[in-house]
Every structure is written in C-alpha cells, then in structure tokens.
Image (tube, rainbow, N blue to C red; front, side, top):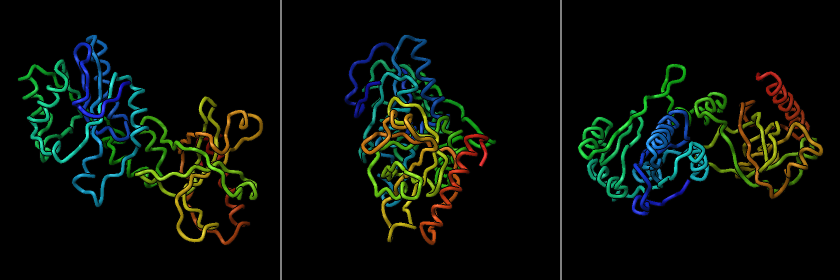
Length: 319
C-alpha cells in the first residue's frame, strides 16, 4: 500500500479509482465495510482502490483544549488499513483552509486530484464540507452530476447499537476489552520496545517485560489477561499491569505496561523477549483496577492471584 501526504501529491493512477473516505479511527467492523467495499469494487472493475483519511483529527483544530483521543496511532491505523488490501492511502492535512471548503469545493478537490475517480465509498453518517453541511444525500446528487458513483455502507450493529469509534473509545477507557475487541474485529494491541527495569518483578517471583506506553486514548489502568509476541514468534499468554505502580513509586510517574508471561524457559528465550525487543501485546480481559498495597508481600500475594485469574481465563475463557 502506497502512502501519500496530501491529495495534491497523488500521482496518475491506473484504471477507475474507487476511494473510501473517512477518519477510520480504530478501523473497526463498520470501517471495514466501507474500505472493503472500495477494494472489492476496484478488483471487479480492474481499477485501483484507495483510502482518504485526515490528519490530524478535526477536533484538534476546532477543540484543541479537548481533542478526541485516537484509538490507533497513525502507524497502527495504516497497518490495519493495509491488511484490507487498498492500493494507496492519503493522509490529507486537516488545516483551517481545508476545513473552510464548502461541500462543493471538497468534491471538486477530489475530482481534480484524481481525474479518473469513479466511485466514492463512505459510511451512512458521513458529513463533510464547511460546518459539515454535506451529507450522503448531497454527495450522491452532486457526484452523479460529475459522473461519479457514491456507495454508502449501512451501519454495522452489535447488541442493537451502532458500532462506532465513540462507542469503542468508551469501552476501552472502562476496561471492557472483550466487547471492544469484538467491535473492532481484532484484539486491541500495544506495540513498543522492551526496556530494562529494576528487576523488582523478578525479586517478587514474577519477572516482567516492560514497555513505556502513552497512547492518546488511555485504557483503564489495572491488570489484564494478555498475549504477547515478538516479531516472528508465536503468541505467549500472560498477565500485565498498565499503570503507575503506586506501591513502589513515590508520586506520579509515566505509565508502564509490565507483562509477565505465564510460560518461561527455552521457548521464551528463543522468541527473543528481553530489553531492546519490539513486542506486541494484546489486551484481552480486564482483571482488576490498579491499587496501592501496604507493602511488597501484599503486592506479591495479589500478583499470584492475578496470575491465577489469567490462567483461568486462558483455560476457560472466564475470570
């Protein structure tokens, strides 16, 4: 998948272009309907499929004091979109000038940037243009005049409620990972480099692999059942704490993800876990909130209980 930094930088493209347009934060099941539709249509027509998204999120322009935290980093978002098979992605800078375009100006900018644009794929609730005056009905009417097709994907529902990025953000911040993962269509994951620590976990009998992690959207701090891997390795079950370690730290510190693998030995060593390794960790089930204990003995006893709970989850699917 090729990446372009603005509409103006798109080169000439082969065949009719089918373009999915949206923020696509989270690349959840609803987004997959839109992007997958553009990929399938392009394949059928012998054309090119692409994705147009916007950087940064419009809330950073209009509400900089309280922007919408993004579910995925740009890198993770691109990786998730690439898995769906489009030929290219455009990260259009969302500036004041771009935001000031009327709906008609936005449509014309698409046509000018992609002369062989054939179809625009959007979600049912897609809004665009200055003050969000353009909607799907407007887009269909005016795009048809330019010989363009518009396809709007129906909402995907779960438990009688529309799947949306807003809904998923709420679930993640509440620690409802099983539900959030179901709506995403994949397991929410942390990516980062393992750093060395004070070996306190090893002293307590539960060695950990530690990743400094400060995402825009912060999951609920606490203990999770997780699975982890390094590049090219199998998945390993584990238990992890995400938070500020109040029992052993004096005052607020940067959050850390501390992962204890439930199995050890040669398999773990061969997988390359250790300081400097790039590790992926999926948050599967929330076990308990982070809390401050009276001392290391009480902390050790609770970690043992957390480990037992995680093992039970992997054996039975239940805490």
